Length: 172
Image (cartoon, rainbow, N blue to C red; front, side, top):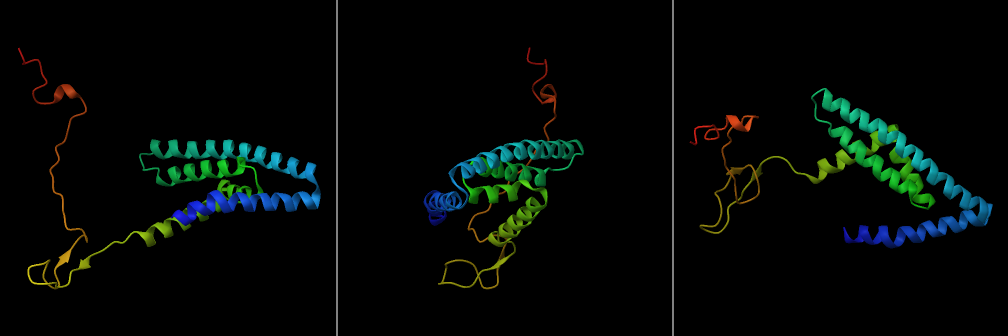
């Protein structure tokens, strides 16, 4: 994780500067600066339009009574893509544009879901035997590799606080 942060804050700006210098050497300083300004403006326009569409789909999901998980993820990706497009540089612009296009945003969502599934383990663990008196017996199954478990109870609470027991006018 520390290496990733190091890459983002040191290597990426150096790579961005190198690409800007190369583009500037090919087409000139003025056109390069104009291109950087235009892609930032394009990023602002795309961020606004895609942000509104994502917000509308979010509200539609809530209105239909379903959990807006995909819409929330899309909103986060749209914000990140807009931030990347507003950042000066061509490398971040490519990634930002990919995050703002709905078709590629779906690919980002599926890739992120696959990555999350690989990093999260589900299922049972089978505990082996250890030294005498340490741990569980052979073949004993547990729902979690952790050595603790929580149990609790729940009570339904009415929406109107006046309906709670002891909250009426019987206090005297």
